[in-house]
Image (cartoon, rainbow, N blue to C red):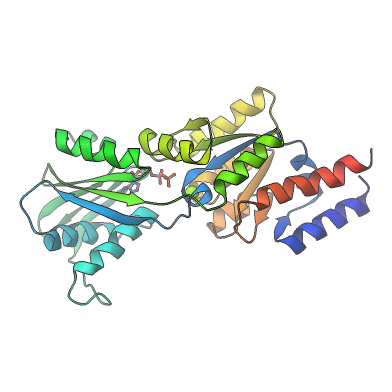
Length: 298
Ligand code: ADP
Ligand code: MG
C-alpha cells in the first residue's frame, strides 16, 4: 500500500471510531488470524450486579452487608463496586452509607480483599483466597458456587472470623453483539480465544454462550501475555482485545493490541488500536479496513 492509502485508511478508521496509532498497526491487522479476548468488560458489559445472596450463618443481612461493604469500599475492583452498590440498599441513608472503619485492609490481586471490621476478620473473594487462609468451604457453599458458575455468574465467598458466612452471586452479562462478532470472525477464518482472571466454571459457561471453544481461566496478567506469545510461536498473527490494567502486558505482546474505548487509561496507552465507541463490532471494522488497504494494491 502507498503512504497515501495508509493515510486514507487511518483517516477512515478515525471517522468510524477506530483510532489506529500508525501505519504499522493498520498493516498488521490484515494478517490477524487469531484474536485473544479478555472476558470482563470486553466480551461482557463490565457492569456486574449482585443477583443473589445466601447466608450460611445466623445473622441479619443488614449486618452481613455492612461488614462486607466496609471491606470492599477500599477496593477499585468492578466486583467490589457491585457489592458496595448492592449493600447500600440495606443502609438507612443510601446516599450517605457511612460504612464502619476497616483496619489492616489488604487487596490480594486476582483473589479478593481482607480487613478487620468491628474487630472481626472479614475475607471476601474467590474460593482459592478462602482455602489459602485455611478456612473450610462447607458443602452447601460449594453447591451455591457451582450453581452460580453454571449460570455464568461469579460466586464470591465471605468468611467472617475464619468461617464461611455467606456466598454472593454476581452477574455480568455478555454484550448484545458478542455472539455475532465471534461468529462473523469465524466466517472470516479468524480464530477466537478467551482469557480471564475469573474461575473456570464461570468462564466455561460464558464461553459456551458466546461461542468460543478455547479458553484460559484463572489467568494472571503475565499469563495472558504468555498465551499471546505461545500463539505467535505456533505461527498465528495475534490480536488482543482488552480493557483492563491486567490486559496491558498482553496488549503490548500482541501483533495488534486493541483497547476498548471505555477501558482503563493504561490499556488504551498499551494498545495499537482504540475502539473509541467501545463496540465489539469494531474489531471487525478494523480488520476489514486493514484488509482493504493492504490487499488492494499488490
Ligand atoms: P477479571 O479478569 O475477571 O477482572 P481478576 O484477576 O481481577 O479477574 O480477579 C479474579 C477473581 O478474583 C474474580 O473473579 C473474583 O472472584 C476475585 N476477586 C478479585 N478482586 C476481588 C474483590 N475486590 N472482591 C471480591 N472478589 C475479588
Ligand atoms: Mg476486563
